[in-house]
Image (tube, rainbow, N blue to C red; front, side, top):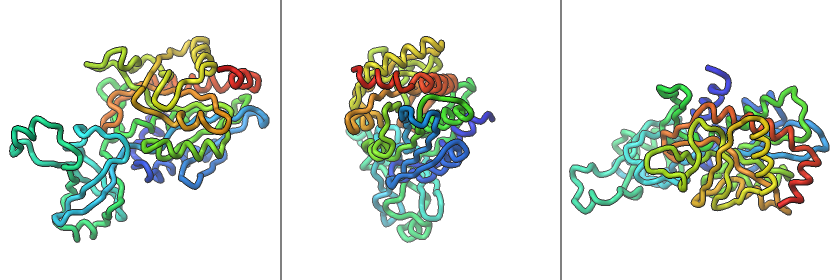
Length: 358
């Protein structure tokens, strides 16, 4: 297994829903410690930095640590677990999903259940099964047994979905690709800067709690005070049945995507042009993305202080916010290549021009 795939697999394997990102942070710390100086803020986000030019511009490469998950809210008398979502789940992808409950004594396997279809009324069959009627079955027979196993209300739950190469080995399927792929790209970009001269100070960031309100980005941006922000997050792949180019424009295997607009950010115009120009100069295919119904950490980063010119770049991903998303290895690699090329262009004069442009 190559180093990048090992890194990605380790990040995927670590459980880390919003508010419970510690295991993911430790994986990222382990990979970043040989590369740069590390800081953990009081909310739990991780920041590593490499100094190319001490008085150069401060450039943040930020991904988020957290995956969407669930939170145990109640234990029934019969030993079933009620839950609420951490992040944005569609109800219909939950039913029948294998999960791990992260209790005090370690992970416990379970499955999300509900009334079987054979005993539903005709009216119930015609409607989507709602989360509020679902539960987690961990094989317990009583509340006391659940407690003895180390599970309490407030414990996090994550899907089971290890990193799995598909029949086409360039396609990788897993849970939490949003946004462990961004974390892997941040680490790999910093790793390739070792021994390389660059005209700036680069901060590699793993933010907590993006999926529940872009919270970690607020504290890390305050800590770093960047001149330029680059958020690395997943783009919506539009190459599946029923999704047209007006819905999602990017396709797997055709390069990273530059986000034009989402519900929290409009790409900074001058920085957007630089990204497009650098990709063309380097021969890196570049796609475009839009996400009017969502947001990324860039939405919080760009409104810090007097404003931080910010763009969002990342590989297209199919089936995000599920236990079985799919990403293309070439898109990951080309995102790293694009970031490395951008880093070399972001000198003091270029950043001055970007900050003066609109």
